[in-house]
Image (tube, rainbow, N blue to C red; front, side):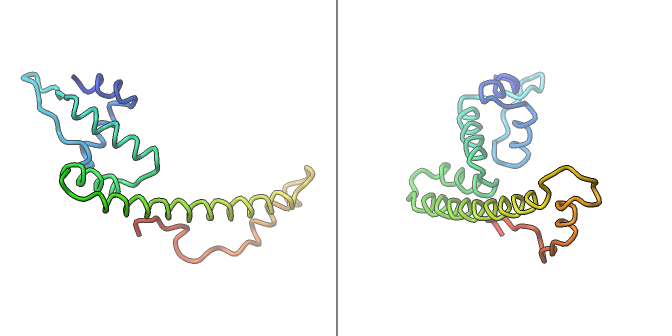
Length: 143
């Protein structure tokens, strides 16, 4: 199948297919005499796998590690369990960060209960008074 057919079957855009090829997650397909990419069922299966992983917010490095394990099916799946456990821990951290963010936003919102001139807005004043966090805003679970 051509790239458009593959993209439709995987419910994504052709640019997504090209992106995953460039990222090394999807192997380059064979080319026709007219230099069109020719994809097979294995490409579709792998692309769906990648998209499902991305849907679970897995990073490319995590997906790459999973694909490497899939490419070596005789290996033990313990590393896959470990990878998923780490990803679950990352999600737990993100949930805590999002709850903290929500508390901050609710606190700001409570500082301005009625419409008034912007220079008297409690939200604007609260944002101006907030301490800026040190360092990067937020790291990722990959370091």
